[in-house]
Length: 331
Ligand SMILES: Cc1cc2nc3c(=O)[nH]c(=O)nc-3n(C[C@H](O)[C@H](O)[C@H](O)COP(=O)(O)O)c2cc1C
Image: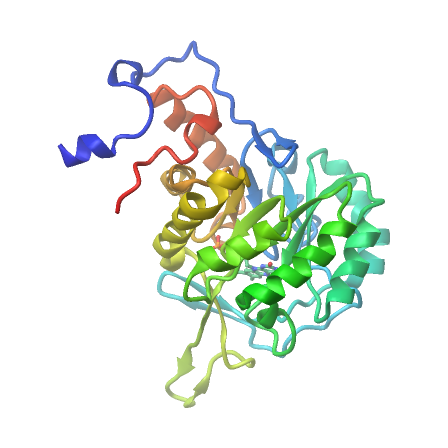
C-alpha cells in the first residue's frame, strides 16, 4: 500500500510502454526554453573547450560555465582535488581566466554550441558581481547569470554571502537591477541550517531561478603525513555521497518556497544515473546539472537524456514538466 501511494504520475493503465507517444523533454527555466533539462554543473566542464571532443555539446539543454570573476584568478595551491569513497573533494579556489579573457577567448566557442549559456559569476564584493553581470548583458549567447554566492573553497568573500539571508537579499537585489535581459539564477549553499531561509531570501529579492546545491564543506586527512590532503585544508564534497541530502533540500525548497513563487529549481548533487535525475525532478527540480559524474563518464549527460526519455515512456509521461514535483509530500 505504501509503495503504491508513492507511485508518482498518471494512472496505472497509462504506465505501459507506448513508443508512439512523443516525449517532450523541453523545460522552461524562467522564460528560457531548454531542449532538455540537462546541463553540466559549473566548474566541471570549463568553458566547453575542454569537452568538445568527448561530448555532443549541442545535445545539452544548456551550458553552464565555470565561475567567472572580474579579474583572473590563479586559484588555490595544489593539491586541489581528492577522490573520496562516494565522491570527491575539491578546493580549486575559483581559478578562472577573468571577465575580459572570457569575453574575447571563450564566448566565440560558446556561441557555436547553439544552446543557451548560463554564466556562473563569483566575486568578493557586490561591485565585482555587478561588473561581471553588467558586461554579460550584451553577450547574445548568454541567457542567464548564475550567482555563485556559495563557494566553500575561498577564504574571503563568497561564503559569507551564501549563508546569511540578509547578505543574499543584498547581493540578489543589486544583481536584480543589472540582469535585465539575462535571467538571474541564485546558487544556494548546503552549508546552512535551514536552506528554505536562504532560498526565500533569494526569491524575495528577485531571483528568477534557484540552483542547488553547491558542495558541502568537508575535509580529508592524510594519516601517514598527518596533514590535510588538500592544500586549502578543507574542500567541497560532491558526488553520490551528497545526493540524498541534495534531494531532501530540493524538495524542501520546492515545497516551502519555489512552488508557490513559481520559481524553477535547477538541481545538482550526485546525479549519475537516469533514476537520480528522475528523483530530483520528482522532488521538484525543473533543470538538472551534473558535475562529478562527468569525471567518470564525460558522455553521461547524453546517457541521462536517453534514460530520462525511457523513464517517461515507461510511465506514460509525455512532458518533463509532468514529472516535476510529482511526489507526495511526507510530513
Ligand atoms: C571540480 C569542481 C569544480 C567546481 N567549480 C565550481 C565553480 O567554479 N562554481 C560553482 O558554482 N560550483 C562549482 N562546483 C560545484 C558544482 O557546480 C556542483 O554544485 C557540485 O559539484 C554538486 O554537483 P555534483 O555532485 O554533480 O558534482 C565545482 C565542483 C567540482 C567537483
